[in-house]
Amino acid sequence: MHIIFLGPPGAGKGTQAEIISKKYNIKKISTGDILRSEMENGTELGKIAKQYMEKGELVPDEIMIKIIENHIKNLNSFILDGFPRTLNQALELEKITKIDKVIYINVPDEEIKNRLLKRGRLDDKPEVIENRIKVYREQTQVLIDYYKKKGILYEIDGMGSIEEISKRIESVLINPT
Ligand code: B4P
Image (cartoon, rainbow, N blue to C red; front, side, top):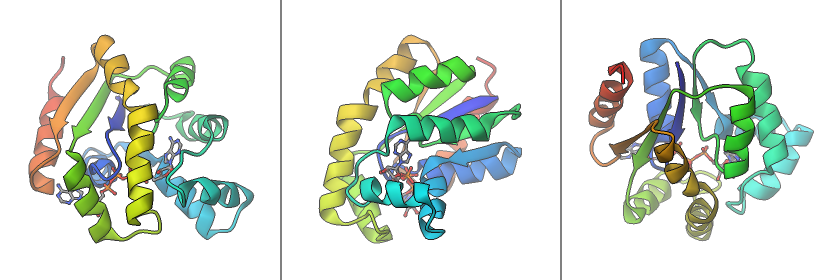
C-alpha cells in the first residue's frame, strides 16, 4: 500500500508513521528525518536544508522531489511522512507512483504550539513555529482538498493519546475502501 501522512507541523505524523511502519512492516520515508540526518552529517544538501529549516520555510520542491524519487523506487509499500507539502510536490509524485490513502491528522493550532514548545527541537522556537504554521496554511493545506476530491483522504482526529490515534489510523488502513 502507498500511504501519505499529512497534517500541520507537530500533528504527530512522524510519531504515528513510526508506529504504523513497525507494526505492519511498511517502509517509512520521513523527509524531515532525511533532511536532519543530512544536516548532522554536514553534507551539501544538509547545508542547503538548514537555511530553510531553521526559519521554518520549506526546502525547495526540486530538491525534495529528487529525494523522494530515490527513496521510493523499488518499494512495493511505503508511508510518506511529511511529503508532499506543496501542490507541485503532489503533482510530481503522481508522475512517479500511485497513492492509495492519505491520512490527514488534524490538530488545532494551540495544541501544535504546546507540543512543539515542549519538544524543543532546533526549529521549535516560538517565532519559527509561527512561521511553520503560516507556511503550512499557505502551501500545504491545499492538499487536503486536493486529495479529498480524489476520494482518498481520511481525516483522523489528532487529539488524544498516541495509542488512541494509532488505533484510529489502523482502522482506516485495514478497511478495504
Ligand atoms: P517534519 O520533520 O516533517 O516535522 P513536523 O511536521 O514538525 O512534525 P510531525 O507532524 O512529524 O510531528 P511529530 O510526530 O514529530 O518537518 C520539519 C521541517 O523539515 C519542515 O518545517 C521543513 O522545513 C522541512 N521539510 C520536511 N519535509 C519537507 C518537504 N516535503 N518539503 C519541504 N520541506 C520539508 O510530533 C511533534 C511532537 O508532538 C513530538 O514531541 C511528539 O512526541 C508529540 N506528540 C505526538 N503525538 C502526540 C499526542 N497524541 N499527544 C501529545 N503529544 C504528541
